[in-house]
View 1 (cartoon, rainbow over the protein chains, first blue to last red):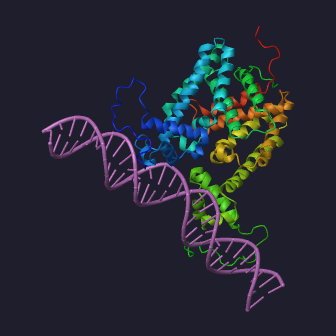
View 2 (tube, rainbow over the protein chains, first blue to last red):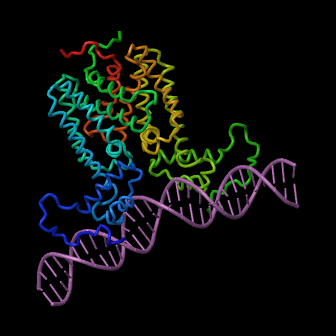
View 3 (cartoon, rainbow over the protein chains, first blue to last red):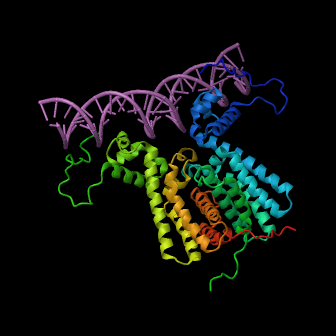
Length: 215
Length: 215
DNA sequence: CGTAGAGGGTTAACGGTGTAAACTCTAGGT
DNA sequence: ACCTAGAGTTTACACCGTTAACCCTCTACG
């Protein structure tokens, strides 16, 4: 590879740089190139060689910083998780009313998926088979997200908050999954559907009526 | 390819076979081998060369019967759709009570996904990117499935049956998606979650209360 | 000063993928 | 007897993730 271009700073001392503003190391550059490639061209185009070309190094160099492609993707997932978590946390912090908070959480979740479809795909949609390998414990942050929902549900007197929160997640994720994969009937207005999903959440978390209408 | 192995019957006359039981043509053999490979080893192992090896021909021969791999997968999807549709149709035909019918439809949908995870993956989970190419009109059968739900919802006096049916689909699909990809918290009992999802469907389809509790 | 070693990088290669182009063989029709 | 159409094969291309071997350039230490 032409070593002239990008002329890597040959000395690692970095001179007397202000702390925190060091030039990004190769690892960071790989990560950001991968992220850009992901949102720009989709997961299908996210190959080691493409990333390397984008970043100006060889494909094999990536393996010096990531164990394999999965590990790289996991790093991307983690980044996405961070952003999602932040969006939800902000709702929780700014909205004391539990009803509006729950609605806000739902909206924020949907908005994240709609605004970052490629990231959502990688985070929650991708290859069951392959992505089962994403370290389970890394999903703790995702679980923390669910707790945001569960807390609001508790305050609203919903049924079995933990379980209800998962069902809400199923509804929201189901919508995003079908929407992002273009499987929803084109005649339906997706925005209206999203609104409706959010408002129906409040019925979804209600405890089942004790006396079924069955005689 | 070694022409000795599997010694393909060199003459196509097939003797005097009973009508309707003709030996499967190569296309059928490819399709069934692909299906077997899919359920046996998962989508990741579904390569043209593997299929060809299984069926005893060359990978390129498959292209004489399918335009490309996507077309082959589409045929598999269609087969899965057929089965799902049949399962749902049977519920509709045997259950006149709309409440039990709706519950039965939900259960049948979930059961199909849980019993045929690899097929469900290919039908509803796979690569948004790539599978957007699955001909939209082929999803008409899927839309017919939704009408099953919508009819029951109508009879139950649910809100906006078409829209409600989609939301029910979102809930069910969301559950299956998260469950099949192993993203649900391992501490939760999936069966209980499925049961709960089905029973909550009846709340999900309720019209929103006209007077919100907001003062 | 010399040298060992480690880290970050490269090239070359392996086995796998989907797919296109060209070729071969066989059956059937005129 | 010849031509044609179809089914199948071989070969090849461009890509993929990944490994092994090698090559620098610094640092540490005797």
